[in-house]
Amino acid sequence: MANIQISQLSKSFGAHRVFDALDLEIPDRAYVCLLGPSGCGKSTLMRIISGLDSDHTGSIRFDGHAVESLSSADRDIGMAFQNYALYPHHTVEGNLRFPLLAPKQKGRWSSAEMTKRVHETADLLRITPLLHRTIDQLSGGQQQRVSLGRALIRHPKVLLLDEPVTHLDARLRFSMRSELKQIHKTMGTTTIHVTHDQQEALAMADVLVIMRNGRIEQSGPGMRIYRDPDNSFVAGFLGDAMRTLLTIELAGEGRARLDTYEFALPDDLASLVAQAPHREITLALPNTSFSIDPTGPLTGTVVAHEMIENTQRIVLKVAGQRIKLLSNRVERVKNGDGVRIRVGITDGMIFDKQSGQRLRA
Ligand SMILES: Nc1ncnc2c1ncn2[C@@H]1O[C@H](COP(=O)(O)OP(=O)(O)OP(=O)(O)O)[C@@H](O)[C@H]1O
Image (cartoon, rainbow, N blue to C red; front, side):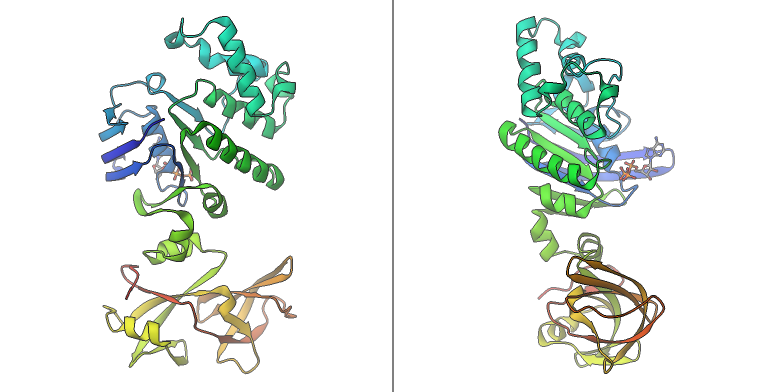
């Protein structure tokens, strides 16, 4: 197992700079999720760690040893990327055995040891009954497990998983996630898992790394980041389903304005706005802060609505901004309806609008 240290990493594709002096440390045995919007550099970072990309500057160390001069095969890593890359006409057993037969591995395992590894790995992933089937006779979920088995069979120091469960249906995705966590618990391999799914990252990561435009916006335990985001991007991206971010204007003396509605900020926020560098701030509120009320001070238009179990989710447009209301009470609304909205400002967080930085006590 290994800790991974990335220092001063820079990488460009032509004139497009993806990373500029990026630093990241991944602790030994951690399960790390890289989370960020499309194009932020997640897959490029995985390719660099794996050794598939060598056209960059900076240093990559596994347990303090520089690996830049090592090829992928010599880095002691297992990789499972989203297109599986299995041999479709070979059996599951043949695909699992393949990494043990690589030229660099010659003489490392006897035939009996290889067979033992294949069976241990198949047991771990619960694919033993499939060993003699060819890949093209398997479901997507089974193929994904074989792909994972192939990544694990050499007991690598580091496991790199790029969107490993993205293409599975919801039920399989859920069970594969817990299998992955169980395997990680059993083997303790330092694992880096790329995803753009917030719920998946929160459910799986010991360490969550949130990226945007080739930079790390925040890293640490997922729930801690969720509750205590450093900036408005992280607050919005990680809390998309649960939080609304609104631009409001400060009106002096602890008061603020949203459209025509002027209101007093609660004491905890009022004391913070004194240090706000600009008049515009971003206020983040739980989606449960909003309710439809004929006497409410704000006017909005229903843009979308749905029921999720016993909860109603209504998206409203208010003065060009979106409010995502969550309610246990079922409101009879349809798209395009004009409604009045009440806001309860509790558990709010505020951010400077321009820099996005959190204003803290
Ligand atoms: N081979 C390439 N040539 C040119 N630009 C590339 C190449 N590969 C990636 N890029 C660019 O580098 C940036 C980072 O891409 P990358 O694939 O790492 O993002 P990502 O976060 O993995 O995105 P996604 O979630 O969509 O897979 C993007 O702007 C992308 O367009």
